[in-house]
Image: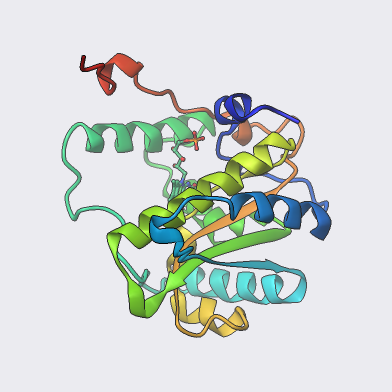
Length: 223
Ligand SMILES: Cc1cc2nc3c(=O)[nH]c(=O)nc-3n(C[C@H](O)[C@H](O)[C@H](O)COP(=O)(O)O)c2cc1C
């Protein structure tokens, strides 16, 4: 098992998985640990659903049909400001261009770009997907912050056991389909999807690793 620091360094977004199912015992071990996340006043405002088997297959089929029909995305909340300020915009463009270049997809290859985008709607072929949510009636920034700790704990817990995942806002595109297929999600406000599993060995797409800023650009010691 990796240490916390090793898992933080090793984690990256995984977009191609082995077909093997992760055992529910392992899943429970990771979820149990992720639930140790702190939250303001210990409110633990998160809800987590694991989809696998037929419910996931059905959701995936509906998601792909919606994507293929060109249905507009209607996520339940706005992730970013309408216009990303610089230098965030430049970084967002760089990661987009970076992954297309990595996959050998040309600037004008609309078909391959669409196929790349479509992968999101099949949850990268994962056999299991977590859906993180909070309570619709209690939306607030702090609630989202608390839920983010759980999301990161899940990713790091998976990484520590040699498993991979990819956080997905794109999986929030059709909340009505999430509600339809995720039993017991009444009143849930979905935040992110997290397809996970064993990374496919030798996968080219999984080798993509966006760089990070040198810490001196965003970290200051004030003393
Ligand atoms: C909340 C959240 C939502 C994301 N949504 C998507 C997504 O829909 N599709 C995708 O391919 N990557 C998605 N990403 C992954 C980011 O692109 C990725 O984390 C970033 O480029 C850094 O790369 P790394 O995770 O490999 O370190 C998301 C990341 C976060 C934190």
